[in-house]
Amino acid sequence: MEIYILLICVFILLNTKVNGQDSAQVNLTLLAHAADIGAVCLDGSPAGYHYAKGFGDGANSWMIYLPGGGWCGSKKSCLDRVKNNPDLSSTKNITNTYFGGILSPDKNSNPDFYNWNRVFIRYCDGSSFIGDAVDPESKLYLRGSRIFTAVINELLSIGLKNAKNALLTGNSAGGLAAILNCDRFRALVPNANTLKCVSDSGFFIHAKDLPNVEGIEQTFSSTVQFHGITQFLPKSCTSRMNPGLCFFPENLVGDVKTPLFLLNSDFDKFQIQVNLKPHPADSAGWANCTNNINTCTRAQLQIIKDFRNTFLETVKGLSNNQSRGLFINSCYIHDFLYSTQRINSANSPRLDNKTIAQAIGDWYFDRSSVRLIDTKTDHPLDCKIN
Image 1: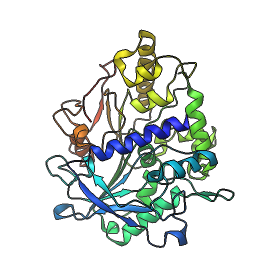
Image 2 (image 1 turned 30 degrees about the horizontal axis):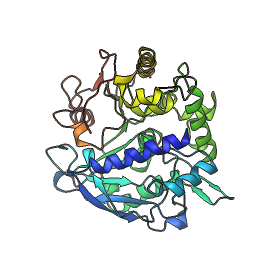
Image 3 (image 1 turned 180 degrees about the horizontal axis):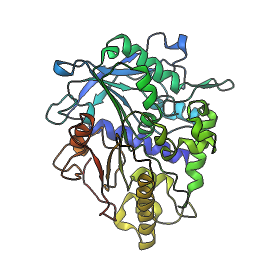
């Protein structure tokens, strides 16, 4: 399962770069004194980030973006990650990255955030920016929590401490990281007038009654254990269930006090392809079905619809926090925010006639309440957007 997750993550990473054609390229900044404070990647290289300086009326507003890339939950899988996926485990050969979608400097496509200070933190720890351990035998550095804290502290020294507005966001494993680190971000940036968090495609559901639940349970449990994550999880959760289950957002968001926006598809392509598998796991046609929904049998499509129903029930079961925003659409897609086509174009998914960019802007600036869920579409949509 871990190999398949890694392949999907590489595809997402490459797809992100291709879709950044309307965006600026931003150079890498290596974290100062990273080794001294242990804020290093899996391979021991210094953590890093890409920073585009804000301007105009966005000069005192900051966006911190946490990218996705799955997880590694054992010595073997983390060593494989270092060997085969250096973009997700090291900064040694990183130079620049594209800023697209919600990070784009284009006013037309990104009207609310185009001129903010925009920061993309390299994801090189394999734990959603939350672990803190070292594997002495392999010398793997499991320092996600230190990386997040150290980068934020460095940004505070160059202007973040004076932020009027601040937004923590991310996609996939980075979307989960935005949930996990949301209140910690608030504590690190206490003087911001408005500080909120957005999770894009980071709402990974437990789906305990659907096929292959043991697969995602094992992935999260091993990640939590190997990276020493339990210490960072809410005690209100770990005191009543296995810490691995406290990595599922449905068991986390009730403890998040900072305003949080959940952006997700209820037909999340990654979760359906990777986490949801009929028994046996390699049943004929499942890979073809999830790669091309039009080839699915009636039984396969029913499993996918069952996932959607479970996803919606899980979201509806969350505590009714009035500060929370929701945009739950039905595109057969995983990850939205890094692509302008997905968040603010003629083909972008719309709910209540709002694009994703409009919905997040309205919610962040309190222009309107945004709690939008597509409850009418009972099949995955081919939204034909890259």
